[in-house]
Structure formats: C-alpha cells, structure tokens
Image (cartoon, rainbow, N blue to C red):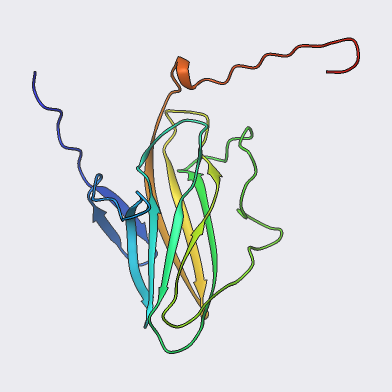
Length: 175
C-alpha cells in the first residue's frame, strides 16, 4: 500500500499579498492549534490566526483563535472579527448567526498591555454544503489600520456518526 500523498500548501490571501503556508504544520503548544497566518502589522504587535486544522465537517461549529502579542511600549487597542465566508457565493441561510459579519453591533475593543499576550477565540459555523469553497476570514483593526487574512477550508460531508438525530417524546403535561 502506497503512502498517501503529501498535501500541497494552503494559499492565504492577505490585503497586500498571498502567502503559501504548509497545510499541516507543527501545532502551537499548548493549545494544539496551528498558526495559518502570522504577521507584525504594526511595530511591536504580533498577530497569529490559529486553527486546529483546515478540514472540517460541513455544518460544524469551529473555534478559530487570534493570538495577539504586544511587545511595544504602549497599550494596543484592537477590534477582532473572525467569520467563515463562502467564496463567491452568498451565505447559507441555515447558518447559525454568530459573530459580527455585517451591520449591527461591533465586537468590543480589546486592550493588550505592553508585554502581554492575549488570545481571542470566536465560535463560527461552516456552511452546510460540503462542496462549497469557504474560507476563515479574520479582520483586525488596530490604530487606524485594518489587517485581513483569509485561510481556505476544505469541507467534508457528515458521516452517519456525525449526523444529528432528533428524538421528540411527548407526555401528557408538556413536551
């Protein structure tokens, strides 16, 4: 039996460039997450967009993480927004509305003191259509700058063990 082929790199699209990242890299300890997009958008500010992997079951809730490390001399104030977006298609109407994808209340600003590292986790849902091309879309606003990163995801169809089964029983008093 032949060994499975090594997957190619993931192309991560930033606002100003495209970066090639290995699909399977060493997890960041101790979280078990892998940094798929990293950068220093401002002096003293280091950002990482981390995920446990890039393949998920369609319809699943996932928890991307943005790690912020401030090595500067003053506080950094940021607004972090992470969502899963279909590529070139409208959002799935069955999606659970989590996060701040459009108009409405913005996420609260985060203050990171000098020498501090904070991790911001977001709970987002991937679309239900397994064949749909999607990406994790992260936006960080800091000191008047907007930094974006898009990491493509691969969706698989739910197997029998991963499908939701609902059983409803009624008694004489209530559901």
